[in-house]
Image (cartoon, rainbow, N blue to C red):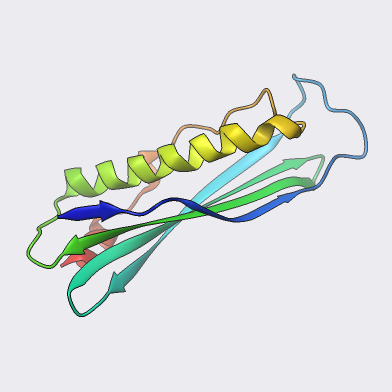
Length: 130
């Protein structure tokens, strides 16, 4: 059995810009994913940590971090497809939390960039679930 935990926002640091930003302004966004192995005496799992930073004119506007994890029975075998689905689900929750919280910021009309799956090294993560 695979259980997914609730995504926890561990960081939401918003720095209002010094001047108004219109909807066409170039705001730079960088999103990263870190995966950590989790293990207990009866379960295995991974923790997914997404970090996103928005900058405008080289100044941070928002630093957002969310963590999510999966708890998996030892006998459960996870393949590449299932691992990618798990990561997609975590990112979806990360995006949903952003969409709810962004409304009180200058980013209210923006959306997170889609997850770039080609940048995820599935082969490096799979051994964590062995």
